[in-house]
Length: 306
Image 1 (spheres, rainbow, N blue to C red):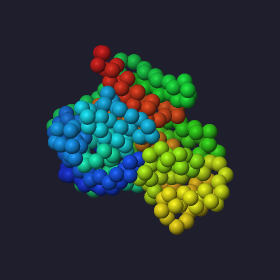
Image 2: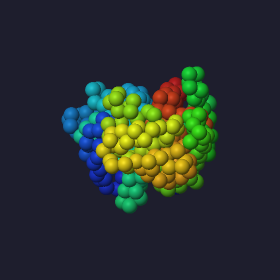
Image 3: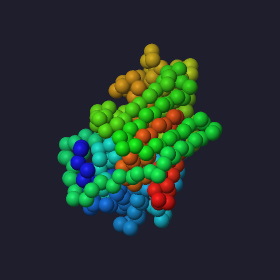
Image 4: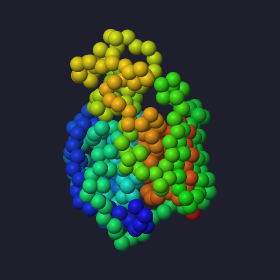
């Protein structure tokens, strides 16, 4: 992964599955793309011209996932796939999708990365495009206390802090730099949700595709056996229980700080909407899709003004 040449996929990769929020089933194909293409989604169910470039100015919603739209075509929950492309150094790819939402798979970037490792990547002739900022950019959310600061730096890195005020999660930190092994340390980390949020999300037409295989469930507040039974019914499984650390026992954590690492996975994917490799040190406190994509847009605007 040390070459400064652009990369694309070496062959087509096929996926299928339901979307996390819509519950809609989709088929998806990742395809090699020419140099300087970037990442372009196509909604094949609408038509060959229904393309959506994966760029920050096309972000249309950040309600619990990142959605992009262009000339009437919309693609949602792109962040895990975009993170895989960025983490694996893929500059150019076509993504064909026959529904509105990218399949959630296991809630991480694992299966994208595994396929890329298995099939290899194609090295292209053009040099990679590196984004050099004119100065430090900082975005704050006064309501949540979140901030992201991006400082020009020849040795890129990301340092992230997650703090939900949760007794279960605590304060989690995650780090990335070029020496980090993205496929094993970041890509397998799955999305998460708090138990008390789930019923609300179901009632508001979100997480229709959520199940016990694609999300870590954090039980922050005391719950009754009846509540756990009702959740099992929502997920259509026989039984669930809460482990002694405060997590639903639907799955086992890959890392004690898997939730913090997943937030890093998301941030990598959202910042990829800046359209290139950022030569910068990134510091993020309580990041989320809204502030992440606002930063990606600010980076693009700052570079365009140079």
